[in-house]
Image 1 (cartoon, protein in one colour):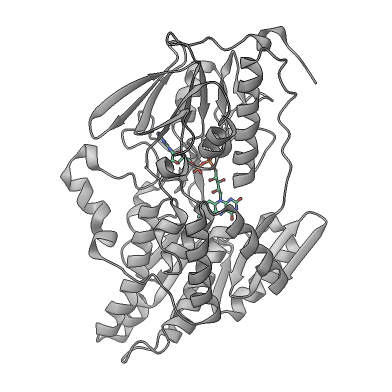
Image 2 (cartoon, rainbow, N blue to C red):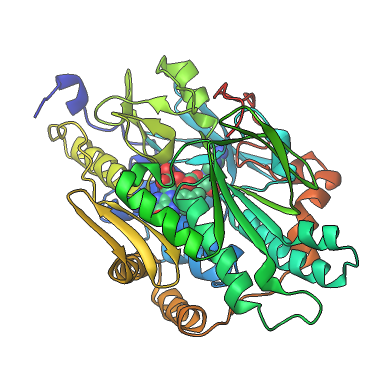
Length: 474
Ligand SMILES: Cc1cc2nc3c(=O)[nH]c(=O)nc-3n(C[C@H](O)[C@H](O)[C@H](O)COP(=O)(O)OP(=O)(O)OC[C@H]3O[C@@H](n4cnc5c(N)ncnc54)[C@H](O)[C@@H]3O)c2cc1C
């Protein structure tokens, strides 16, 4: 364990007495940090730009009508209602001043400045279109409840419009679904759309045959689920094919518009797929707050917008500023929930040690608990390092783990019911799709800048909104 006298200094108490801990974000990092500090003698302010905590790994089930949004997005205020040292505040953080030790948030034109003694930044990441943000209008990503509901409206709406269409080419366009990105999110999304078309909707229409729908999963990379290794990736690809998903690899997206998508294949050929519904599951871009922190602390910001942190997850020269989860870069750790959860707990523990005047912990060590992805009903892949599982056993493991992490007893009970409806039966409990879901984002843009919803999940009023990846496409 390394100890540095500079780090042992106790937290400065606020003028009112208790040290003020400000946490930015109500995702995995923010929520788990707040909970870890439940017995600490501090005043915590948790600022989130949404009023809910979001369990992102199940967003695709909201988009495909399996779960309701409430099941994966409980109100943060409700989750923390018994923790009296936390105040939950709605607002988008637009500035952080490391010298003045303040965080500025705004909501609907109301600006609030929050002083802090310790700061935990867990603002996550948004979608990256690799420099082509205009694609977002035609190919929504999957980062928020808004995204999932918009996609639900687009997916179910495409079948409805196909039932009305007279022209076969138009029916084909409406019944073609393209998912860009063959990582876990893309694989899960494509698998579920295929099940929707082949099982759930097969008897629901009179003029069209939903089972003829094309579901295409494409990626510029040569493999499906590359992070799971060659063997599991290949098995996943085969299982997707069996479920009716066309997998196209080495396919780079060069353009997206309302009617379809343009692709350049590995051999240089350019082709077009006419498709009404396009879904972007290809890249992430860290919160623009990382750039703000980088400019003030001198810490490097990488091409994906993540800020390089010290081995103890703090910023250079700022032991009071902790950055956790998807927006930090350390030892090439992946952007997964466990990195955020473990980082949040570690930072909360560091704060408590500083408060107690104890020596700091050693550097942050991530314990990899493995990764998993579902492909279709009864079929998943699980990678636990040396142990790899595939098929039904993996699917049961996937169910159990996700159920464990869903927040709240009520949500767990209804989730199990909805899973029974979808996986044992053919149904989907959440098929409501409204115009508001599909067109709400565009409509908000017309109401005024303070209502404008970010298409990529970045700051609405981002002071630094240019793309940082420099990559051309997926
Ligand atoms: C579709 C999808 C599926 C995934 N599946 C898996 C999976 O199966 N397994 C896995 O381990 N990981 C999965 N992940 C990744 C995992 O969800 C993330 O790694 C994890 O959420 C990161 O936690 P975080 O706290 O850093 O960010 P988040 O959980 O994204 O939380 C960020 C929080 O900050 C808030 N915020 C952002 N900007 C601001 C601002 N300016 N002001 C105030 N608040 C702000 C957001 O509203 C949010 O509450 C998935 C991600 C996605 C998108």
